[in-house]
Image 1 (cartoon, rainbow, N blue to C red):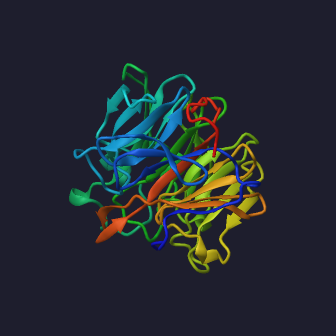
Image 2 (cartoon, helix red, strand yellow):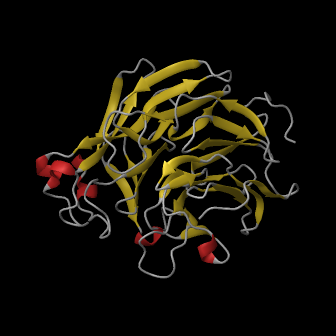
Amino acid sequence: MRYRQTGLWSHETERATPGFTLIAPLQCDGVHLIGMNGEVRHSWQTPSKPGNYAYMLPGGHLLWSGELATGPNPGGGKGGLLREYDWDGNIVWEYEDDHQHHDFRRLSNGNTVYIAWEEMPVDAKAEVQGARLGSEDQGGIIWSDYLREVNPSGDTVWEWHAHEDETLLAEPLHSMSTRKEFAHCNSVAEIPGGDLILSFRKFSIIAIVSKETRRVRWHRRDDSWGQQHDAEMLANGNILLFANGIHVETGVYHSRIVELNPKTGEDAWVYRGSPWPSFFSPNISGAQRLWSGNTLICEGLPGRIFEVTPEGDIVWEYVSPWFGGPWQGGQINSVFRAYRYEANGPEIEGRLGAVL
């Protein structure tokens, strides 16, 4: 879907959450902070399109991933170059792994964790269930995921390998998936206590991995999520995720934002479009619970970013004007994720003045 009008669509000043929204256009270089009226207030120049996205760190710094030309790319989301910029665009930290993909996070201990691909060993490949037989990558390869934590010097201090986890090996891949990848981890985030919450697209599974035991200690599969993205634990202990809604068995394809209570397994809050199919991104995408209680949603494929109240009212809406490509025969304005930051919060620290 391509919107005819880009830029700001709507802004209810009394109900929207004031701040600056960070956008890294998926097919273009550069990262931009925009104001509530859609104006660009600050930008970072980058050497390439992103390896998905960027986000801000305290002190006005930006953590960004760039796409390298080397290394595998079996399922999209390729990165490889992790780079931290200061407010003025100076490089203050850099790390390369041309197998890195999708997500990367700065941890509370100052280290950085990221997702990467690795070739699945023969014995583990024999245990993979589901998906379409014969759909492996060239040479019969199945690509699995690993997590790697590196310190500021670039030394590896911790790793986890998906193909070594019995909980995941017991789960069949989605019947409409290929076998090029096992798991397809598309998000990682730290939770209180230091463990990591992960999203696995190929299973429609959210899981928590123990840093101590290097095993999945909790997981939930829900095929109605339709190969979700961006699992984050909220301050109340619930989990917020973007349920893409692709390859589901019932109804018309549509996306949802789901707040899941992991203790009860029940949905604490759900957002759908009105009508439901008006909100749909089959891939990428994310959601952020704002300090006001509203939720910022990135409908990734069409580049639409909007804010909703707990009641589901849209109070701010913007469509990315940055198109690039070629992508499947045309130009596209997709955004992997977007984040909003307070004007005087630890990330921006008043550098941009008041929110207009």
